[in-house]
Amino acid sequence: MSNKDIHEDSFQYTDSDKVEKIFSQYPDKRSATLPLLHLAQTQGGYITSAIINTVAKLTEIHPAEVMDCVSFYTMFYSRQQGTYKLQVCQTLSCSLNGADDIVDHITQKYGTQPGETTSDGKFTLLKVECLGSCGTAPVIQINDDYHEGLSIKELDILLDSIP
Ligand code: FES
Image (cartoon, helix red, strand yellow):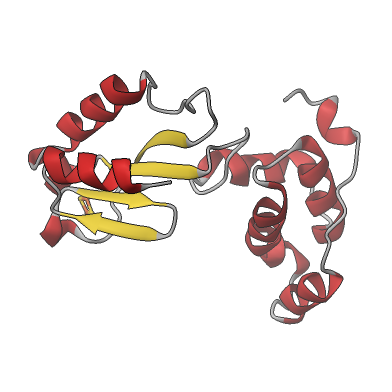
């Protein structure tokens, strides 16, 4: 995404009531940046230059500041993700309990490196930081659901059960 891109295009939220509700919760417009990005990503699947431009206008901050938020927070995606996001925790407890083996297994199973999406658009493999469930490591989050303490065999059964 170039600096030129972020000055072009605009994004249309489909639910203006939700946008208004977000703004009603923050006395300072710029504080609405993250929830506005989240709402837009929920609608559009990933953060585009049009979304950055629109959020910048709505919050009255520079598009570069919005881009900073997008690049800082791993929950924001700058390209299309698979239907299922396989988010493997890489932080200490999970790392010590086989997270790398899980990543390697998924990589071999689907031929997809971390950050990539399978050619059928079904899975995106992501390495993420602590998911806050360190006592049940290793942890993999698939979309909104946590799966904890899985062996490779159990992981295979889980992945193969996804339609
Ligand atoms: S280290 Fe993986 S959930 Fe905390």
